[in-house]
Amino acid sequence: MNELQLSTRQKVIALVLFIFSIVAVLYPTRPAAYTGYIVALVLIFLIGMQTNKKIGTLAGVFSISIGFILRYYIPLEVSESMIEATEKYNAFLSKFFWLLIIGGLVIGLLAGAIGEILAEDRLKPITTKRLTMMAILVALSVIINTLRIGSVSFGGFPIIYAGYFLGPINGFIVGAVADILGFIVRPSSFAFNPLFTLTSALTGLIPVIVTRLLGEEYPKLSFVKVLIGVYVGQFITSVFLAPLFQMILFGQGFWVLVGRAAIKQALSGPLYAFLVVAISNSVSKVIKLDSVKSQ
Image 1 (cartoon, rainbow, N blue to C red):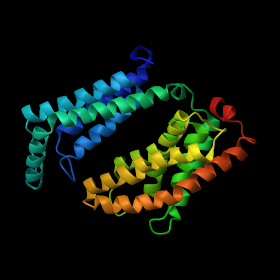
Image 2 (cartoon, rainbow, N blue to C red):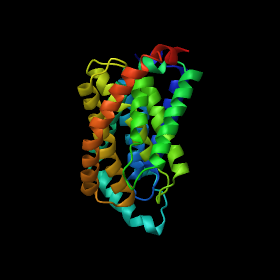
Image 3 (spheres, rainbow, N blue to C red):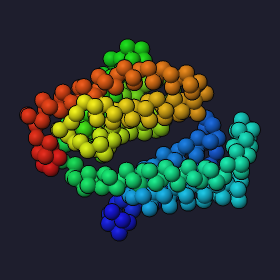
Image 4 (spheres, rainbow, N blue to C red):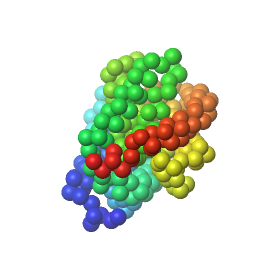
């Protein structure tokens, strides 16, 4: 897939995300000055997902570069409470300028590679049947999260299963919608943040992609390859990204959060994999996946 095969909608979305990624780098942000860079990386990731490796890479390089250059030539007024943090951030940018640009390049390249893998899935129309199944899985995730005991919840399972059953794109959508609705139904003590919506969305995307790369696809799934997919996905989202965002946004201890998340995912991963395989074997006999995807 190359840029000539991109639809007008994809090009417009990529352009809008590109502009917002520049703005995210340019303007001072809260709760930390460098939050804008993190947001820009998220937007670059979404650009790559919508396009391909070439465009994702170019977007990563140029959006970060343009944002940094504009910060240098167009100094922005900041509140007194942000002055010290902004000065430290500017010094950080000066010291690691090229490294941060390389970070944007890598994110864009990886996301573009994923975008190429998902090219066929993007062409499939969103049908009534598919929307119904997505709505059911979103509802299950929200309900399970609402009934959680303390920090223990298995609301991620319906999202993971959505990726295997309906495809990675739909799993991504289910994860994002479930996080937003879950926050509305059961607000946390912290304000809503789209970074955590991204981790929830990736929960429905990464496991199925990893399992596909290992040569298996729904409904013919083996426990071991699904377990690998689940572990890779949960390590990236729950063990690494979620603690990273909590550290950046709320100042919480990164390694403490990583330790807790790692123990939880080590225990829940095999359960998730078993349920995916068991339910897939049963559901595939009743519901034909092709009918859900194409009708």
